Length: 124
Image 1 (cartoon, rainbow, N blue to C red):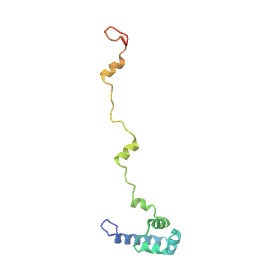
Image 2: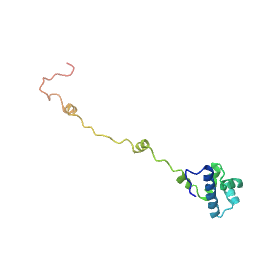
Image 3: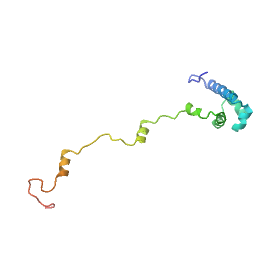
Image 4: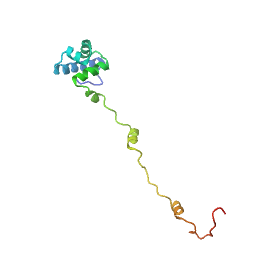
């Protein structure tokens, strides 16, 4: 049965328990073996397989023994970066190029004696 948003919590937990049980059996582990390797009680394994809640720490231990920890990356994927995060990673890109205005260009090229007015020394 596929797990959908329309399913009740109880139905989703029951499906997860069923899948968990099938993975345990494929690995040829008894409930006792799984509990021992994961460091949890047999009751925890039974609760998981019957669709009752278990703690996330116990769930992780059992998933590790079954080789299913990587499946969590698919279940809860890393969110894509926000537009601001993408900009921060790229660094500030130039948005425009400014050329000096003709007035600024003339002022930087002008030297004393280039104009027709009489020269005076600065400060007089």
